[in-house]
Length: 311
Image (cartoon, rainbow, N blue to C red; front, top):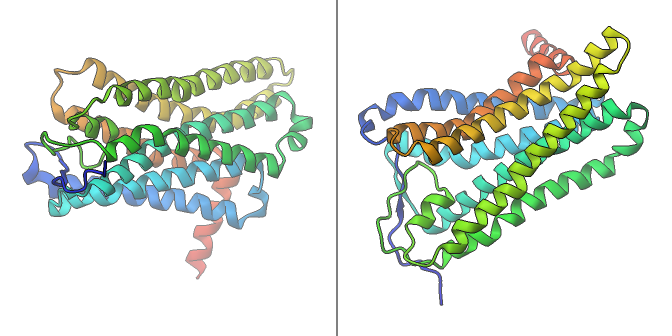
């Protein structure tokens, strides 16, 4: 059986009932997209350029910034295409590829946050062994493991989408392709595609959150045991940025889950808006959090702007 390539293309949806306002709605979207690209791009440049930032903590931060950039570049073209030019048609192949990257990168981001929690746990609990435990090769292995987990785990639910017949409406509920949207349009048995994501979420997002929470409790216990108040504040401050990023990510995940699960009678525009908040808010906030709370990043940003002014 060959893939269902002869079917009509999928139709993306912006904000139903607000089509006339799409050009105005596109302004904040475009501003956020540009901010995400500039913020995360700047972080990557600073970490690459400054050798004092060539440490495990900043390598993991670079992974987070890279993931946020990829999420933005994956979603931006179709969202802005719908809002600016009402370009709604999307081929099956492009749609499945976008869905694959969107969901894979979400799991990658959760994995990176877990790796960052491990980094802070080692730094606080066993500071004298930090460099011997988190060597460059080990950081690379952790990063590769996070990427493989994200990209391989999404193959099983995405591949069947290529073979399903689509005889119902081809209209999707967002201006981007999501697995849960596409599978509902299939005229086939989608039991596997319904069950697998639930198990996957439990083994990735939920499990990661549990481990991160447990590591935070152990870190807090260690910090509270430090005699010097100044040293205690310094140790706690190194974790504030990471905890803030974790909260931003998981609060949006929980918010989106609650809206989809319990907000069935809420206006459709609320569901759509929450989905965009989930995809845009963490990539927008992460560079801001690290530039405010991390002195080395803050200092490098100031130096970078000073150089441009002198030039």
